[in-house]
Image (cartoon, rainbow, N blue to C red; front, side, top):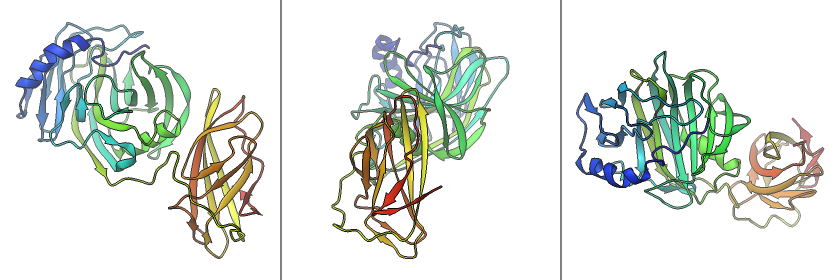
Length: 378
């Protein structure tokens, strides 16, 4: 399926028709109906609800409530091998010149300490659609136009439709397993996380999905989160679909950097570890992979400064890393702690990761040494 960017095909209309809608829309009362093509309004003094009928001239109406919306009429018909007809949604942040009241978005990824959300969907049978939760990011703090990276979380899909691109593997995020797709619609890159079965209600960390996308090399800490959106992409039908409850919050304060972190000078002769265990987990696709490395101190004394040495198998080359300072990108590699994770208490652990290319296999290194002492592997 080749789904174009919501509203991208109608960019000219968004510059005219939608502006009028923005200027005239006000806070929604309970059970307010919107049938205007790009009609929008605010709810709870915090979120924006938009009709966003961008791919069809046929009627679509939504009923706006105090906590979400429901599709009351959707007359458009889209090809299941092409794009959906619309994206009615509720959002926090900025979308095509309209920002939700009092939002702190866009916000740089490195400045986010937490980003959480809760969502409850209502589904119907007999229609072709996906329940799409969207996270938008861009290299600049953009509040209009097309953002560079879209993260889609498919809570449900009905009918013969599929995400943009192709399957690149699986991921476990928020205690759930997702099928991961990756591609581009020609205007922006898309990474989609598809649930194996419908999810009706969930409270989760948006930041977990952003970090997984970052670990895949799609974005960096210097990018900006611009909006968080939840709605539906209908192809055929859709009356009765509803977001009955939506909430989202993004807090600043910042997490330790996870891309090209500042390095610290390790001890000239760091103390030998009396025991260590390495857990090495990979997520691979085509010609690349990400690795998450957990360093556990199984000794009886704390480590104050650590250096983990290993040798990558032939054909593997590291392209980026997080939570450690790496020396070498292929062959012999040494990962050293950075400022905030240099101390590992007895029976404690820390983790770092990297993205790399491979020539056909993401085989793990055969051995690891921590501060010169060999480690066991889990």
